[in-house]
Image 1 (spheres, rainbow, N blue to C red):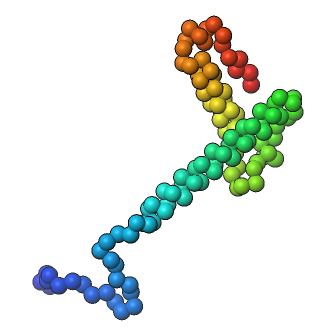
Image 2 (spheres, rainbow, N blue to C red):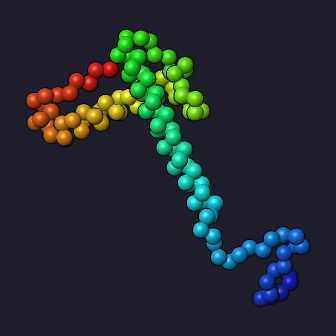
Length: 113
């Protein structure tokens, strides 16, 4: 068994040396930044899909989620769009009544589909 030495290991010729300090633009920082941008873009696209679905319902027209996809590459299922629309309606209702049960019972917001 070879004896352990305190000398640093040598890198093969042609390989860059690692610096002991980390840079401010680490790969993980770039990844989380681009992931946050993608998440925001996805939510914007989903909001647009919900708005299109709502417009179709208001006009009493059928809504086809497959043909109403935004051109930015995100694809949403009809059930996903419906779930987001439902979530947005509930959130609007909660904000409308200010989370006050008495006020809600006096004038409930209609949650029509």
